[in-house]
Image 1 (tube, one colour):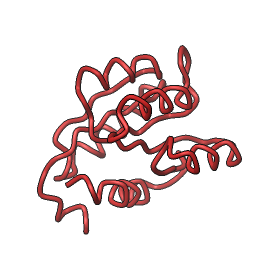
Image 2 (cartoon, one colour):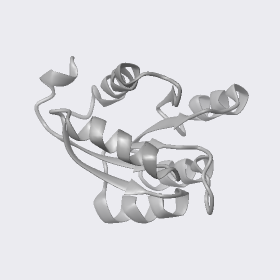
Image 3 (cartoon, helix red, strand yellow):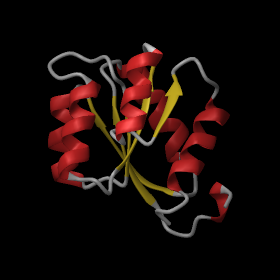
Image 4 (cartoon, one colour):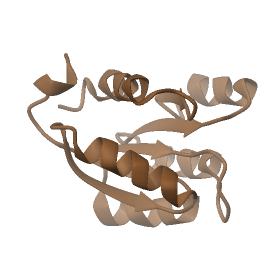
Length: 131
Protein backbone atom coordinates (compact mmCIF):
# COMPACT_ATOMS: atom_id res chain seq x y z
CA UNK A 1 0.00 0.00 0.00
CA UNK A 2 1.48 3.33 -1.00
CA UNK A 3 1.32 6.21 1.43
CA UNK A 4 -0.96 8.20 -0.84
CA UNK A 5 -3.49 5.33 -0.66
CA UNK A 6 -3.87 5.49 3.12
CA UNK A 7 -7.38 6.73 3.77
CA UNK A 8 -7.19 7.72 7.44
CA UNK A 9 -4.74 10.16 8.96
CA UNK A 10 -2.08 9.39 11.51
CA UNK A 11 -1.13 11.18 14.70
CA UNK A 12 2.67 11.31 14.88
CA UNK A 13 4.96 12.25 17.75
CA UNK A 14 8.50 13.44 17.00
CA UNK A 15 10.80 12.99 20.00
CA UNK A 16 14.17 14.66 19.46
CA UNK A 17 16.25 17.08 21.49
CA UNK A 18 17.37 19.06 18.43
CA UNK A 19 14.91 21.78 17.48
CA UNK A 20 15.98 21.93 13.83
CA UNK A 21 15.50 18.18 13.44
CA UNK A 22 12.01 18.35 14.97
CA UNK A 23 11.07 21.30 12.78
CA UNK A 24 12.39 19.67 9.60
CA UNK A 25 10.56 16.42 10.32
CA UNK A 26 7.37 18.28 11.19
CA UNK A 27 7.45 20.17 7.88
CA UNK A 28 8.12 16.96 5.93
CA UNK A 29 5.35 15.04 7.67
CA UNK A 30 2.77 17.84 7.73
CA UNK A 31 2.88 17.89 3.93
CA UNK A 32 1.97 14.19 3.66
CA UNK A 33 -1.70 13.42 3.00
CA UNK A 34 -1.70 10.52 5.48
CA UNK A 35 -0.63 12.70 8.43
CA UNK A 36 -3.36 14.32 10.49
CA UNK A 37 -1.28 15.87 13.26
CA UNK A 38 2.30 16.11 14.44
CA UNK A 39 3.32 16.86 18.02
CA UNK A 40 6.79 17.21 19.47
CA UNK A 41 8.76 16.12 22.52
CA UNK A 42 12.22 17.38 23.52
CA UNK A 43 13.35 14.28 25.45
CA UNK A 44 12.16 10.83 26.47
CA UNK A 45 10.37 12.03 29.60
CA UNK A 46 8.50 14.65 27.58
CA UNK A 47 7.65 11.92 25.03
CA UNK A 48 5.92 9.92 27.79
CA UNK A 49 3.84 12.99 28.71
CA UNK A 50 2.95 13.63 25.06
CA UNK A 51 1.95 9.98 24.54
CA UNK A 52 -0.48 10.24 27.47
CA UNK A 53 -1.86 13.56 26.23
CA UNK A 54 -2.13 12.96 22.45
CA UNK A 55 -2.22 9.15 22.00
CA UNK A 56 -0.12 9.10 18.79
CA UNK A 57 -0.27 6.24 16.31
CA UNK A 58 3.45 6.46 15.60
CA UNK A 59 6.55 7.91 17.25
CA UNK A 60 9.79 8.96 15.55
CA UNK A 61 12.17 8.55 18.48
CA UNK A 62 15.71 9.85 18.73
CA UNK A 63 17.63 7.43 20.92
CA UNK A 64 20.18 9.89 22.36
CA UNK A 65 18.44 12.64 24.35
CA UNK A 66 18.91 14.28 27.75
CA UNK A 67 16.69 13.74 30.83
CA UNK A 68 15.49 10.35 29.51
CA UNK A 69 16.98 8.77 26.42
CA UNK A 70 14.95 7.23 23.62
CA UNK A 71 16.02 3.70 24.55
CA UNK A 72 14.36 3.98 27.96
CA UNK A 73 11.36 5.93 26.69
CA UNK A 74 10.72 3.38 23.93
CA UNK A 75 10.77 0.52 26.43
CA UNK A 76 8.34 2.31 28.77
CA UNK A 77 6.01 3.25 25.93
CA UNK A 78 6.06 -0.28 24.49
CA UNK A 79 5.17 -1.75 27.90
CA UNK A 80 2.25 0.60 28.50
CA UNK A 81 1.08 1.24 24.92
CA UNK A 82 2.05 -1.79 22.81
CA UNK A 83 -0.13 -0.65 19.89
CA UNK A 84 1.90 2.53 19.27
CA UNK A 85 4.44 2.08 16.49
CA UNK A 86 7.96 3.32 17.20
CA UNK A 87 10.59 4.15 14.61
CA UNK A 88 14.01 4.83 16.07
CA UNK A 89 15.39 7.81 14.15
CA UNK A 90 18.98 8.13 15.25
CA UNK A 91 22.65 7.44 14.64
CA UNK A 92 23.38 4.49 16.91
CA UNK A 93 25.43 1.40 17.74
CA UNK A 94 23.97 -1.44 15.67
CA UNK A 95 24.44 -4.14 18.36
CA UNK A 96 22.14 -2.40 20.82
CA UNK A 97 19.71 -1.53 18.04
CA UNK A 98 19.45 -5.16 16.95
CA UNK A 99 18.53 -6.10 20.52
CA UNK A 100 15.69 -3.52 20.53
CA UNK A 101 14.38 -4.86 17.22
CA UNK A 102 14.55 -8.47 18.39
CA UNK A 103 12.79 -7.64 21.67
CA UNK A 104 10.02 -5.78 19.82
CA UNK A 105 10.80 -2.48 21.58
CA UNK A 106 10.94 -0.64 18.26
CA UNK A 107 9.25 -1.43 14.97
CA UNK A 108 11.93 -0.06 12.65
CA UNK A 109 15.11 1.98 12.50
CA UNK A 110 15.90 4.88 10.22
CA UNK A 111 19.36 6.43 10.36
CA UNK A 112 19.41 10.23 10.67
CA UNK A 113 21.73 10.37 7.67
CA UNK A 114 19.07 8.89 5.40
CA UNK A 115 17.15 10.92 2.85
CA UNK A 116 13.54 11.98 3.39
CA UNK A 117 12.27 9.49 0.80
CA UNK A 118 13.79 6.60 2.75
CA UNK A 119 12.22 7.88 5.96
CA UNK A 120 8.83 8.01 4.26
CA UNK A 121 9.41 4.48 2.98
CA UNK A 122 10.02 3.33 6.57
CA UNK A 123 6.82 5.06 7.63
CA UNK A 124 4.96 3.30 4.82
CA UNK A 125 6.26 -0.06 6.00
CA UNK A 126 5.40 0.48 9.65
CA UNK A 127 2.03 2.14 9.02
CA UNK A 128 0.63 -0.50 6.68
CA UNK A 129 -1.49 -2.05 9.41
CA UNK A 130 -2.57 1.20 11.06
CA UNK A 131 -4.84 2.51 8.32
